[in-house]
Image (cartoon, rainbow, N blue to C red; front, side, top):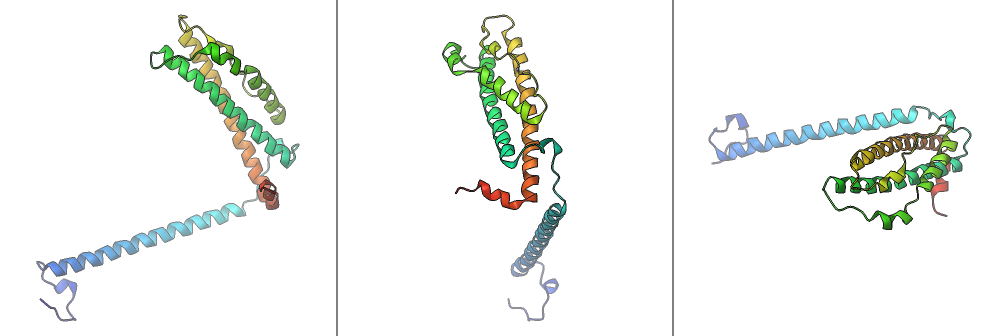
Length: 200
């Protein structure tokens, strides 16, 4: 059935399929327009927030005032590498704990022993302490990772070591965050310094 051009949607017969389809189409367009308006407002708010953040002067940390930019980058790399080494020890520890609880196979610690050097961890800890002026938490005795799995207190020993490593990792993460913030502040003060990171 054809309707006069002056007919409104409200005047269409309620049971007419074509009228219902047209009404649904109009509602769909309204919803799409509303979504676009919400997205546009969100984009404007994000742009405004970015502009406000750029307007805030960068705050440098006096704790790093004694470090040149190159030294600051090197210090960040040192902490990142230490965090990676620590993650390796934690994975070994977790594997041993799972084995003690019957959730997997134990490691051949005698074969692993030559490849593991607790000395590197202690050396890096000292170096990071010198850079930041404050010592990191004490490392647990990593030699305890070789505890005999048949020892009655083996699980408790490894749990204590896990707690010590977790505290050490939290401290590393905190230092990594603070030095990254310092680098960002310096780059904001002197954007040209970022160019030094580009390959020659």
